[in-house]
Amino acid sequence: MTPPIRRVSRREFLATSTLGLAGLAAFGCTTPSPSSPGASLATGAPTAMAVNRSALATVSFATSGTVKGITDVEGLTSPAQPEIRSLCHCPLSGFDHDGRVIPMLAERLPSVEDGTWVVNADGTMQMTWRLRRNVTWHDGHPFTSRDVRFSWEFVSDRSIPQVRFNLRTVTAVDTPDDYTVVFHYSASNNFANLLALSDLFIYPEHLVRSLWESGEGERILSNDVFLHGFVGLGPYRIDRWNPDESIVFKPHDGFFLGQPKIGTIVVQQLDGSQAILTRLLAGQLQMAGAYGLNFQDGLIAQQQWEGAGNGKVHWTPVALQRLSMPPRVSQFRDPRVRQALLMAIDREELNRNLLSGTSQVGHTLLHPNEPGYQAAERVITKYAFDPRQSMALFEQAGWQRGSDGVLANAAGERMEFPFRAAVTDQEHLQMQGAIAEFWKNVGVRVTYDNVPLNTWNDVQQRATFPGTWLASVATTNVNLTRVWSTQAIPRPENRYVGDNVDGWDNPVKDQALDELGQAFAPAQLEAALSRLAKLYSDDLPSLPMYYKTEAIAIASELKNARPRPNSGGANSTDWDAYLWEWA
Image (cartoon, rainbow, N blue to C red; front, side):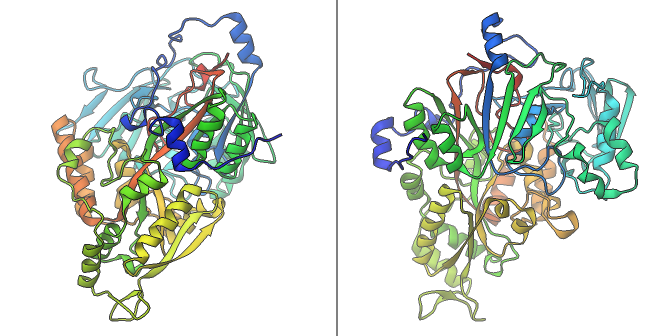
């Protein structure tokens, strides 16, 4: 029988949890780091009984939303996709649980010191990757440099809708031998040693090339190799993809970093946080991963599930939550209006009353844990809660209250627009209502347009919606160009795929992003980040609200599993699932 779910009031939670979430305020709720990939566990070799227990165990892992396939095909992506594909695939390099870039398919990261990372006087660059020699695809076929070169060729084919943004400056890929890949860049990039799956998705040439050369164009994407029959390089392989969209993973016996210990991992793709909480409290889940529990349900899980000794709910501040202000909405085009809309919202009160004071108000596109944040804080423009100044800015922009109290301009246009949220996202729904009340006080009206999760995640819907919504954006420094470049604005010609959903189009901003990629010295990096952050705070292409606190629930018996350090497609909770054990 499923235990009853009781909503927790802020007062009850604060009374029972000692300042709400222990350790969260320091922006670093992590446990000691496990060993690096390929190394033995710090606790020593597991006993035979522990290994057998793990091999017989089935771990159920939950995400919110539905992923139709593993690959980076446009229209199949969703925020939870990194969680699913990290189980069955691997990149050349990626983030560990502490936000450090580590080699995965590569033997080591390219470096200037050993000559594998060369920046030329003309600004071009070469990066040489040495690949591991003991890597096989799930079907037993060896992984070689030819797979990497083919993947670059394949994703460069503009006739096939794939995510390819971070490869835009790669001009050629050489393969001197089966285990060496040389990337040639038209411009230097100090973040190029991160080639996660969101940067370069690696395809099996022996399976995909014949499909690609068939001449059928994007029709090949309906082939099962891109969907439920994906063959990857990760610690687990897809055993079956069930009609209810749950996915059963079994160990890949030839995994290059060692035999995975857990015998079966089942990913439950559920419709929102409420469904995840219900199964967690019923004992049907051993882990709720990224993009799973919302804030309120995380509090309930902490009180009832963690309180009963079933495991721990880890809290990590990740993505910046901001109100998107796309320029296609005429009311948003004047920067004074965007400033006025932001100054009408008491973000500190939202944090106190809706997030139990556990979050941090956002003022910039950077993250408090990332290098350069403190320097940027000193130069950015901040907008405090000030309804009087908000009204003054509206008036300067030509907006006056009408007889019904709603702002209107000389052309008769009203300051009224739709506000969207996913019907399953209680945190966003609560924020939506509170923000609407703040705006109402200064003459702004919204109409609620709340939609199912599949509509919320639809890229074309998001790119064409004529209003505002609370959106999450990755705040790692390596993702800044991917998220904010003008080339990343979703448009019909790129099939609405791109992370710059706010439509921030400013050539000075693009120049700052280019300088950021070329800033190898720490002082240069700090200066470039400060300039970019200042431009964002002045332009306000979106309204920064707060840093989302992500709740990751991990059962006590599941050892070596950890939360991720930040959001974005390069971060996941389960990239090291081969190290997990069931005690």
